[in-house]
Length: 461
Image (tube, rainbow, N blue to C red; front, side):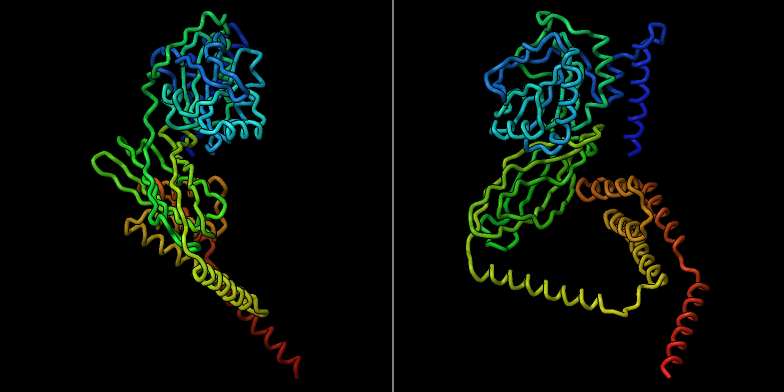
C-alpha cells in the first residue's frame, strides 16, 4: 500500500512537470521519456529494440501486419477472454483508443484465446473497437516474451519498443504521459518506421513466468464426494520475484469448488507453492476442468498478471446411495442448524454483556500473541484479522492491507518482518484496551437490574 502511494506521488509529480513543460516554453527542461515511463509504472527499454513485425488474422476478419500501423505511437497489449486482470484493464485501453486515436496513438490488441469466438465475445461484451489480432498458438506472444498477461508494449513512431508493462492498470491515468510522448516524438510517415523481423524481442526486464503442473488425486471420483486438484507452481531465482495468488479453475456446470489451501517450500534456489483445490461433482459425467488461470504479481508490479495452463478432465462414476446419503446428511445438518438457530432466537435471552464481549476479544488476542511467540505468522494474522473485524475499529485501507498480508503468507509464503508483526499486534492491543469495560458501570448495571426485579416482584402481589 505504501509503495503504491509512493509511486502515485512520483507519477503525479512527473506528470505535473510534463504538463508544465508543454504549457510554457520558458519552463524548466522536460523530464526524459524514460523517467516519465518509470514514474508511471512502465519499464523503459534499456536499449533501442525494433518491434518484431508480424502478420495475424484480425478478430474482425482478414489479415493485417503490425507495420501497417507504423508512424504512430502503438500500445500493443496481449490479452485473453479467460484472463481476469485483462477484463479489468481492457475498458481503460478502449478509452485511450477513443481519446487519442486521432492524435497519433493506436491501441492494438493480440488475443491469445485458442478459440477466436471467445475473444470476439469478450470484445463485443466490453464494446471494444480498437483493432485486435488473434494469436491462438501464442507464436507472436513468444516473440515478445509475453509469457503472462496482460503484458503491454509501448512502440514509438519509429517502430522501436521503448517501454513495456506487466499486469493490469488503468491506462486512462497514463494519458498525460502518452501526451508528453506525442509531444516529444510526433507521428511520422509510415515509411519511416523501423520494425524488426519475426525474431524474439530482447528485453532483459521481461522475466520468465512460473511454470505449473496439475494432478488429480482421484481421476474417477464418485458424485457428491470431494476430490482434490493439485496445482504446483514453480519458479527459480529470487523468492521475492513473484507473489502468487490462488489459481482460478474453470468449473463446468455440475462441478463446484469447496475450498483451497496452499503449501510453500523452497530448496536450492527453486520455489514451489502447491495449491489443493477441493472440488465436488454433483452428478455423473465427464467434466473438463480447463482452462486453469494462474495469477501472480511480479516484483515491482502493482497489479497481478495471469498465465493459462491446460486443465485435466475428470470422470465421475457411481450413483444412488452416495448421492442419497449426502443429501440426507445435508438435510440433517440443515435441520440441526435450524434447531440451533431457533434456540439462539429464544425470546428473553440476555444480550451479551460488555464484560463477556471483552473477555472473548481478549481470548482471541491472547491466541494471536501465542501464535506470534510460536512463529506461526499465518495463525497470528488470522487471529489479528478476526479480532479487528469483531472490534469493528478497522478501516477499509487497513482491512485491505491486513488481508493482503494474510494472503501473501497463506498463498505466497511471504512472512512480514518482525517490526510489522509487532506493529499489528500493538495496534490491535490499543484498540482492545479502549474497549475495556468500566467496572463501576457493571456494578451500576447490576444494581439497576436488581431494582427492576424488585419492582416486578412488588407489582405481582
